[in-house]
Image (cartoon, rainbow, N blue to C red; front, side, top):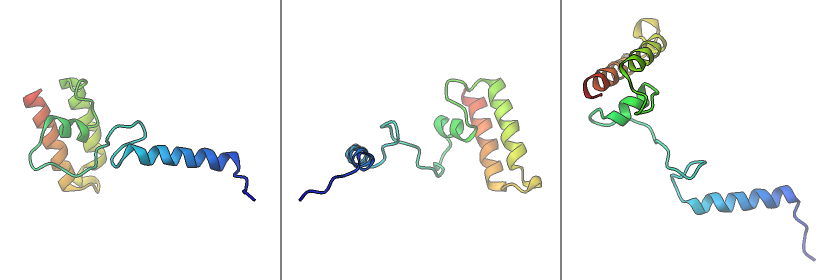
Length: 99
């Protein structure tokens, strides 16, 4: 005799099968997500990610605003990481120089 599966379990199983079919690296919207870590050399995408800007919204005003906000949160004098503060500064300099 076949057991009845509750509707919630059936829906969950279907969703899981669809998720597995997307393959590894697929996010909730079917796109790959940024896996983290830093590149050997700074690039525009990484600089924008560090300052939490989209590449399109990276104006000088927005770059300076986000840099200030990030440094207030991560400054070594306030218990932040010197390494992260250096990466934040590097991202700001890169975006200001390369637009």
